[in-house]
Amino acid sequence: MKCLCLIVFLAFVITQSYNDLEVEAVSSDGFVSRKGVQFILNGEPFYANGFNAYWLMYEATDPNTRYKVTHALENAAGQGLTIARTWGFRDGGYRALQTNLGSYDEQTFQGLDFAIAEAKRVGIKMIIAFVNNFPDFGGKKQYMAWAKDKGQAVTSEDDFYTNALLKQAYMNHVKTVLNRVNTFTKVAYKDEPTIMAWELMNEPQCRADTSGKTLTAWISEMASYVKSLDSKHLLSTGSEGFYGQSTPQRMTSLNPVAANIVGSDFIANHNIDAIDFASVHSYPDTWFPKLDEKSLLDYLRKNLAGHIEDAQNVLKKPLILGEFGKPSNAPGYTQAQRDAVFTTAFDIIYASAQKGGAAAGALFWHLISDDMSNFTDAYSISLSEKSSTITIIGQQSRKMNLIGRKRKPGRENKI
Image (cartoon, rainbow, N blue to C red):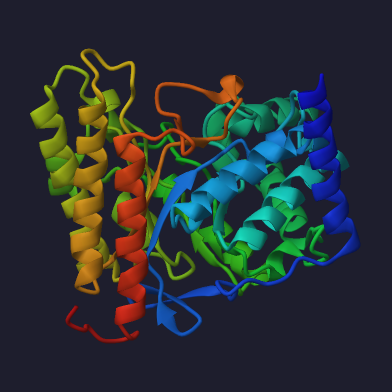
């Protein structure tokens, strides 16, 4: 009982401190921009090691559980992690942000406010996605249900990309998020330098058009719309990075076979002026469940190398590995296997970054705080644990942070 009272008290103190005082800017403050294949922060190249924590808004909606957000972000900053990727949506359901089209829950919005304010306090940048391709937390499926309620003749979730009402609903959500004034920092999201970038969608797919043209057209239209409202922040797709018909040779050599029908196109989706950097996710264990560990690592190397090469030479934009990990429920799983995945991904990213290349960072899936059994799964990692994987994460953070201090923007330096 004493422990519970202390938690409630700490949550109250944290909340009150933001109500009474504006959040102080930290040394990492400033907008992240892009110059060629590099990110720039405060006039210097910005290389990052980061994490996914999609649950930040959800847990911060309840003042009594905000300490979980605080602990997770403080632990991440202590390991030198500098980017948190999270959701800027929860469409319908429990603790919904958007309870119906155009209707928002203020308490949930304050949860996102708190997460941004805490990231600002500890010096972590954020990448925030506007909607989900999948039904988790609502996504396209929920938008489709809302459209049907309004009498729209929608038959597929992929009508999200072409139906006029659904496109306007998405744009309305984007506008609401961008214009939101944080109740803790008193800064509008579109003016908040803690936010590094927006993502149009988490892992966009359009199986209704495997040519990739429908999704590319939607990305182009919505990217231009976001930039018309917010020219200060970077923007990306949130894509898994599957190749499409614009590069058939890459489809054959790098795509899982199942990815050839999802209607995405890594090159076409990112070769749009309003898209500032490329996104790729990597889950070999899911895509190739019958491969042995060596073959899985070989694919990880080949896939990352191909995307980095194309970001560097074709797109001429930075690349972030937005999701990767090793599931602990894989057959024969060992901690060493997870370590090997992290080391392999980190080494490839670092080798490119060290030369001034397009690979700008990696965000593992996914970070949790202590006492979070509701979000614990085969990929979750708590930085409070003293595992070899966490040591590897910290080492990569320090290496990536050092690169930016040793290289001036616009040219390659020897390190």
